[in-house]
Amino acid sequence: MLISIMHRITGNGLAFAGLGILLWWIGALASGAEAYQSFLDWVWLGTGGGLQAVTAVLGKVVLIGLTWAFFQHAGSGIRHLILDIGAGYELTTNALWSKLTIVISILLTVAFWAFVLLR
Image (cartoon, rainbow, N blue to C red; front, side, top):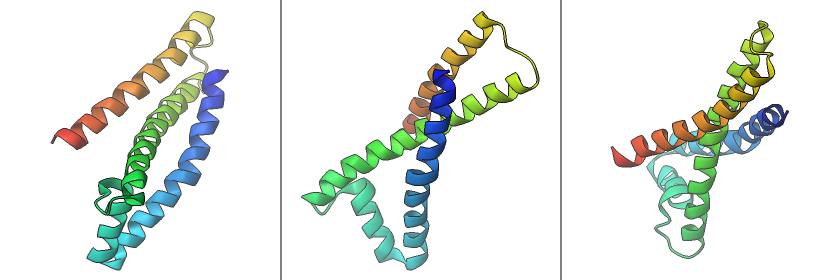
């Protein structure tokens, strides 16, 4: 039950927060180098100091959270797809898959950000 609720919460988080950041990012890309640099300063770099430094930290937290939400939502969606074909309704199997969606989403998030930050 918790995984189903998390599936709905992560879907809404991706739809609202994720879409807002995605549209801001695409708009900054389309507006030129200065707008894109402003986006980076506010969301990632925080080079302006003060409020930009705070929003950059929050931006990183939000981006990492959205990445986890994406992997959690995808994993839970795959789990629901498997349940829809009639497999995995046994209590032990269902409980295992529920735990695995959480563990795998965390591991994929760590691997993704390790790749992004360490390349």
